[in-house]
Length: 79
Figure (tube, rainbow, N blue to C red):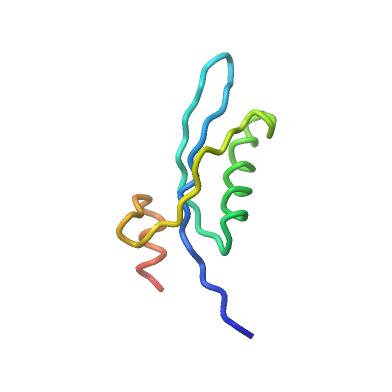
């Protein structure tokens, strides 16, 4: 059975709340791009926002040099 490799994705997008546009960019570890997007949407909608109000504009797989999240950087270094 092949071993799955965990990748790091940057998910960017926007949503409207209280008549204000909020732009976000989050880095997530996941096996697939779809898993990273689902994790980000779940996190954002936990504040009482509807899923249909979240618009994902970009999903990018990151190399080790592109990662800015300190927690994720530390997790990768420990491997």
